[in-house]
Image (cartoon, rainbow, N blue to C red; front, side, top):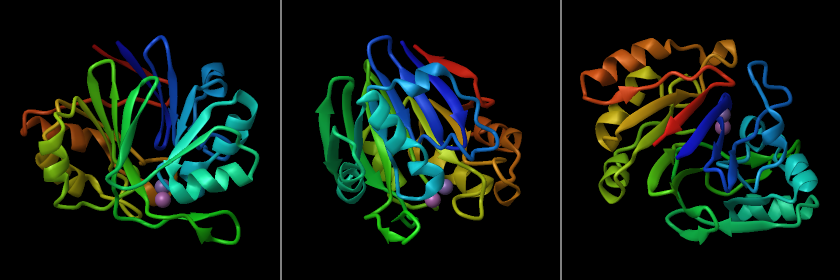
Length: 228
Ligand code: NI
Ligand code: MN
């Protein structure tokens, strides 16, 4: 069983009882984040791209916990220059096995830059995470793209975590189309209602994907979904 706790925005903590995986840990400065002590002690931290609302507190948490940072080559290496001891670079279309299962980076159509000087952050990414026989797709920040059909064809996705807030990413309408392309078992909306710029109604998303035969789950920050 994998417990999926929504911390807020695009941040999730996955916990299968043996390993804790923290994704896009934007906590400080996140007005909606509901964090827990477990967030401070992950085994792995995944970073989808370089923007502050995704890289977030990753470096600080990794330094304090000795968690392994996994991201694209540019971001993983950048974290290494900032005092993170354990980091693993991957890149788009590539993946590897880790103690929890495996991780592969997918494309995401977005930007990626690091720090105040807008250092190049490599290509933004999404994640295909295999853990305990389940497949979780975290799309990162992205617009809609037709290759989601391929992602859904290559892996039978149990849960898709999809941005719905618009402005920087897909809005509800495009995220519904993404569900049609990916055909996951379940979908959880993210990257909405953190700021006014990404205001969206998750119920509209849930209702629309129901007609595609896909169950939508709305998690409030701090809530956990148990994936069995
Ligand atoms: Ni972004
Ligand atoms: Mn973002």
